[in-house]
Structures are given as C-alpha cells and as structure tokens.
Image (cartoon, rainbow, N blue to C red; front, top):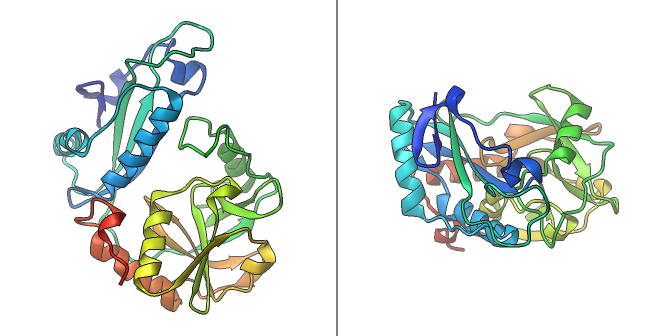
Length: 288
C-alpha cells in the first residue's frame, strides 16, 4: 500500500518523519477520517473546514483546499487501485526545537493513509455499554480531532476488541457525551436528540450531516444536556461516524431498541446513501 507523505507517494514501510516533529513531541497535530465512495471523497469540504479551523487553533500555518486535497486523493486511490476507501488525512506541526513553541509552525507534515473498503451496504448493528471512564474536558475552547487520544484509547481498552460493541462516555458532570469513536443519537416520537457540543464532544462531520438529514425529514432536532435515563426512553438509538456511517443500537445497559428495524434509522440510512457518491458539503442539503 502506498501512502502520501509531503508530496510523494511511497511505500508505507519507507515513511518517516523527524523525531523533532512537535506532533510527536507534544501531540500538536490533527487528523480527519472519511470515506471515498466510488472515487468521491464524501463531505470533503466539511472535513477540510473543520481541519482548517483546528489548524488556526494550533498555529499551524497552512490551509487546505478542496482542489489541492482532491487531486492528491485521486492520484492516491489510482496508484493503489482503489475505488472505495478509508482515508486518514494527518497534519502534524512539523520540526521544532525541544521545548514549547509559541511561534506559528510554518512547515507541517501532511500524511494521507488509504485502506480499501467494500462498497457501502446494509446497516450493521451494535450494542452500547456505559463506560466507567469519563470523557475528559477539551484542552481548549472546543474539542479538536487531535493527536490527544489517550482518553479514547483507555476507553477502548475498557471494553476490549469486540467489533459489535460501542462504549458510551458520560462527561465529568454525568451527562451523556459520545461514543469512543462516534456521536450518539436517539429518537423519541418526532424528536431527534443528541448531546450538545458543550458537553465536550467532538462535533463530528457525520453528526452534523445527520442533523441536516433530520431537519430535511421534518424531525425536531434537540441538542442538550441529557442523562442516561432520558436516552433509555427512546424509540430508536444509533451512533454515527464517517467510516461506519449510521450504526443502529440494539441494546444499551439492558434496554432494548429495534436496531436496524427502526423506521427512522432506515429512513436516515436511505437518505445517507443517496448523497455519498457526490456530496461535497452538508450545506448543499436544504431544509425542506
């Protein structure tokens, strides 16, 4: 498998960066994960918008455009003979002296990792379990999709490698937050609920897209502070991320849900699949 590293397509075994990179020394770096569907990088504009906002926060002096990144992606999937792919786009601060730096980083490292994926298909279900470890507070004003991932790693170790289980965090104040690698949603009647960003969650790109789909389907969207007991009263529950898309939950702490048989889960999944081969941004999905 070839990866992209700072202008070159190289074998992953040959890739290296300096140990003086502040992404390694101090965790100053960001990443985005998304899917390519039949050659199209789904919601790329939204991912780059979040990435560029994070680069501002970290004083990394580069801004990525759709044309720049898509050109690289098309070459990358071509040389790897991929049509449907997992993409991880990683930006680290670049080389600096040992010590905390306050000046902007002028030469970041860009690495793009591809992995093959099968074409998008049917809904896959998971069970949800409540984690003992709490969601940590963001390091700054908002949670960045950054190299600071220890909280998630410890949570994953808590539940193990079972692929059909997702761990759900409470935040430090006891409110529902998010999954280890996902955002959390539930539906009661015609209301779509999801924890608010100020609970400390990552404002996922798929989260934002599903909220847009909720509006399109005339669901009332409510973002707020919720207890687990409130969520367990739901008619349907699901989690989202950019690789797994919409994942219905069948059971959460002993309470059962319809999973992929849920009416709204099926509708949102159907809508999702209609867009994934061509949509650049959620902003192109109007409220009807």
